[in-house]
Length: 112
Image (cartoon, helix red, strand yellow):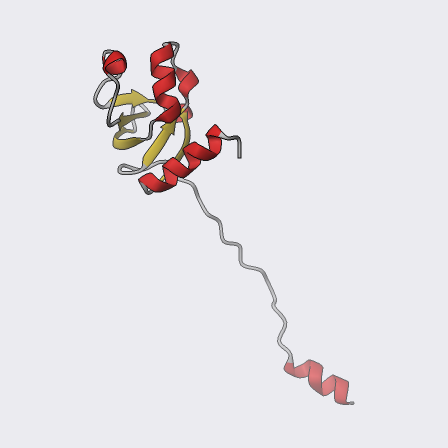
């Protein structure tokens, strides 16, 4: 008798709510890491291995993301526009802050 009274007071969950985190991709102002092997020029590949760029413009119709880099080496300056257009598949990772992107860059560097 005591067990039945106890069970009547407990309310069970009738359904589960699902929450989904949609990834809309990088947004203007985000910091991105560009895949160094998306280009064939060695000096640009070496720069992309250590560089974090900031997304400054998105052209949805053309699916282009314009990224601006700081401290571009003089040798690579003639190959990198300011800002430089990329496709989304060229990004390894992105983050809201520069520190987040730099941390991801270090993690990729050491395969963590």
